Image 1 (cartoon, rainbow, N blue to C red):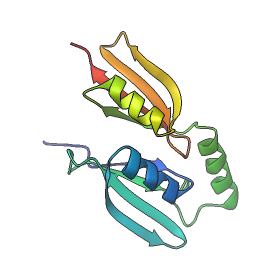
Image 2 (image 1 turned 90 degrees about the vertical axis):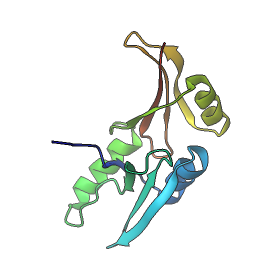
Image 3 (image 1 turned 120 degrees about the vertical axis):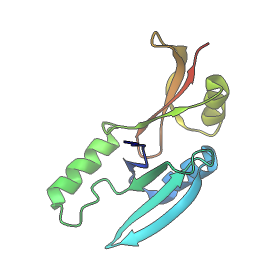
Length: 137
């Protein structure tokens, strides 16, 4: 059986700001931009991984969700309490400097971790944590 990752989802509160970050700062390509029932989904991906996509979705992408549930999700997103993603990079320090220079919110500067990577982390414009790791030799 061959199972591979195809898509993962990140909640965003402003698709235009998220798109500017993921496309213009991280260099991802836009693969889809869809609106439905006053919601929007933007799919981005790394040009080097054409079969893996990140879907930027509303904080609670369910048209049947209650207003209270929508508010709770928006609050969790604003606090940065929703999960993020981990990217692999060939040069953690250069990636860090590029994102910091672009104004991304720094969570952690590059550091060698005991589990075999050098990594750093940022928040995207919606508050999601993004880690960038480089395997150590």
